Image (cartoon, rainbow, N blue to C red; front, side, top):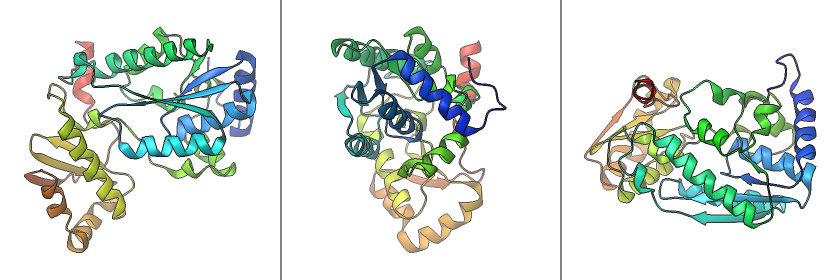
Length: 277
């Protein structure tokens, strides 16, 4: 059960600390993003050395996220395992239930790893705001008895940003991340070369000043999403940095800009309908 909405972020933080201490030693499913970094930071304070961070490195994990996860765990002095795993065959065709199937498999791996390390608890960074979008992966988290302390404490994304900033965590203003499979429409065959192309394209766009960006892949076409108020700036970036040429050099035949701007889960609408059908 989540905390009452009337609690302040600091009161929710106190509740989080109590939840973490009550359960004892744990493994944290650690992506290196805001949510799991804040959770790991809080768990380090609450549990001390009774903590393990586990990061899963797949072909659809952005390379930068793994680097950031390694650096963050090292900076906190937390023991850290990075487990490499291939694209599971049951999501190779990017089905509508992809997120559930993937989370079930990957969190199962974290649970088994934790058990081998003598840890009975696995924690993840699900927060209050994750309940709004289409997130079938949450079902897998519940089925595997993975705990979501941020959610239990009633913490939402803005709470986490405020608290992370106050505690000096560099991730406080990092845009939300998501696996690279979310850049592909459902039913499209997943190929590692295509995932690398998307990852490199997004890295380039971040380098030229667009930290919140998605490159959605439609066949050989790249559809760029940036915040709507910054869409016009992409034309300036094209003039200065050759965005079109750079993405075509990566293998895209066509490059376009989505005038509606960046939307989290912009390819999720049909998936939600498919799961309900």
